[in-house]
Length: 328
Ligand code: FES
Ligand SMILES: [Fe+2]
Image (cartoon, rainbow, N blue to C red; front, side):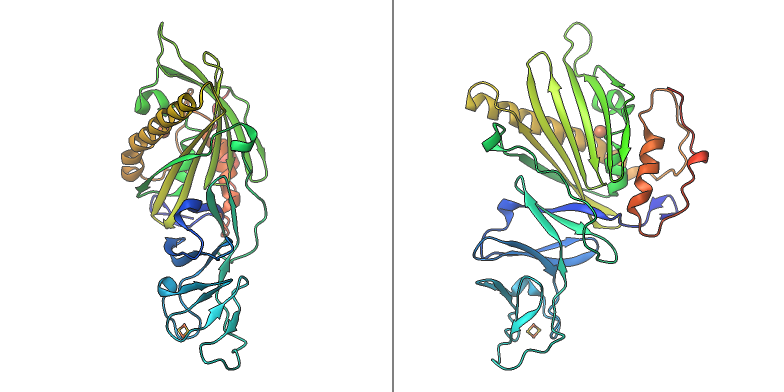
């Protein structure tokens, strides 16, 4: 897992591969994730599918393929592949080779994102990610921004438990960890507070974090002074072992007039994206320290590291006793 101060394996889990808007009915979108060339396409009836990029017949890249009704048709010899990846007809109109099957990836689509399940052995998903409230439930849809970073999902997701960097890197007035960390299988929850401005101006926000694997962190934010509620998503997707796309997304519970709600959402989205931009140079330049020297004031880093072990197929021994834990 750890190779020369870098995390050298892509952890299993759910990862965002596109926003729903990026792939329209009939569209074929080449994407690269998990160190692999992939094709995201949407059937004419609206179903999104993620498949391997290379045609099993003679290896054409399916970025040049076409959606035909419910199938993806290769532009080389006209083989057509259905939702389960099987070839349903060839361009010759003759018998279909039984072995002609395109690799498929499990996906989920909700809240305006297409998520794919990654497991190095391509198993089916063990767990799901939450469906969050949207316009029908009195929340806005998500405003999304993205940034490409030379980093790893475990490093970028560690940010949400690294309470200690908020003041130093992001310039907040104060931050504190509430100490109520819970781990239930793939889900890690904890809570912290930030005073954005500090001093007499004091703008306190309460954060409840849910880490659903290393590609999907949900942060529920409440701002008592304005009685505003936000759902923030930090979605880190591995392009390969050394590069991620980090998407930030903000949804806001309807708050006053519609235009005002959207203005606040936009400001929050710009702010969150700016914070990731402040983290990015640190992520890019840092090395991975497997046994950090933790100090009072750090967030629950040791607990997070233990939680992360379950997402590696080549599991290393869990060395809990050797990780320094700071007394509460
Ligand atoms: S390579 Fe795709 S149909 Fe021949
Ligand atoms: Fe940060």
